[in-house]
Length: 290
Image 1 (tube, rainbow, N blue to C red):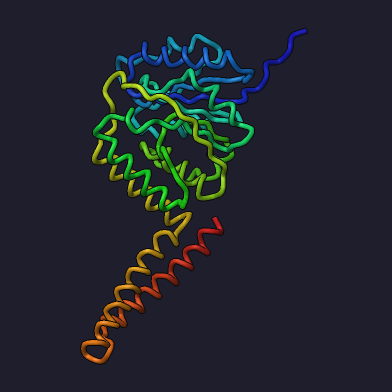
Image 2: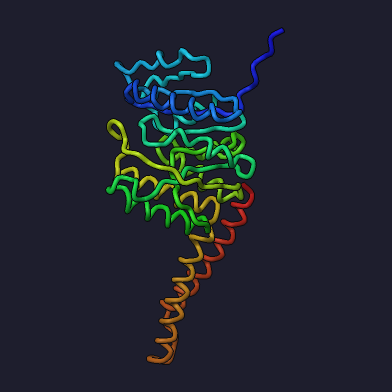
């Protein structure tokens, strides 16, 4: 009597765009070796994000647990991850890059926290990140931490595990670009999901990166700000309202001491501060309905 195979407990998604087949094969091998140390039933989904002629990854699907999905044209990192999630029924999702930057042998260290967390993020050391991206990454993490009112060490790490239920709840917010991981982090923290960070190594990329340092950094900041308005609007409205109120009060005091009356600008600033604060309260009430 044969027994039916156990359903997959986790799906590891690997988006690829013009990655050398040998590098993707090394990534798969490292994941397979890592899961030999665990009892998890897993599958690996490769998403060829429109790499074009000369990038045939079919040879990698000879193993039963490795599957290939393809986009007819390049849609973006986030779109590739979303395609992988849509084709998975496992309760846990794992993601990693196919460029050799992440230590895929460390997946068991992340899996060890699945009983206590909804998302486990591989935390990179800032010094391991290419120097051109270190300052933008530092500022982005600080900005996101302020908006989320919680310390975020690595907002957009591409090696992480998360529950499928968590991913599906915020589906409509995910962009097609690189900022999907940032969106997922902000959405999880902003809505009370438990997130655990596990320190990992980060290696030099094999091949050319498709990240545009200026354009993508600007996009990250814009999306994080938008997510702050979604999930914690008072963190944006209160500083602006407080600034207007403070400037108005100080100027009003100065006006009263110098010209013996409070000027129109001072009153306008104080009223503007009050209105902005009230708008923030309204936005907070709306956000809590999400």
